Length: 141
Image (cartoon, rainbow, N blue to C red; front, side, top):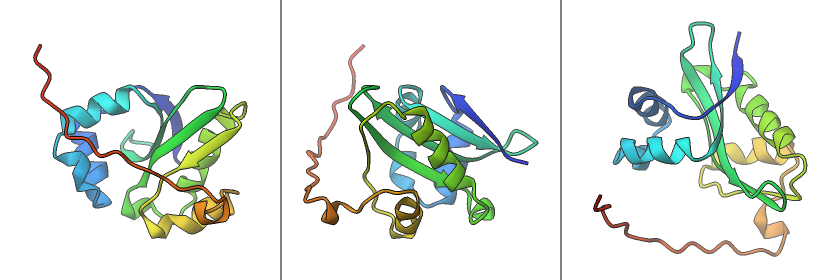
């Protein structure tokens, strides 16, 4: 059985195992930074009966006008069992008062999941996504 829970953080080991299992290696270049980002996000996890992390969804929101889903991940051995769908449903239910939920996705294998959940591809909404890549400086604390 899979248990879905709001959590505020993950261990470095859990981050490496989950993000590495789905090939999202950019997050593993700075796992401590990823851990801080996760801690400052709304995150729902999926864990098995042994409390092993098998998936997560995380996003950011102003709680009124917009929410953005950043990550939806499920370990390969647990994919195609409805976990991603349940994570997405739980997230969108939590933000039911928000008028727009946006997903930026560069993983084509997730497109059908999002479309089945009622999301519309940006090409159908006449929107363009812009990204301002930044090179972050090391904090000097």
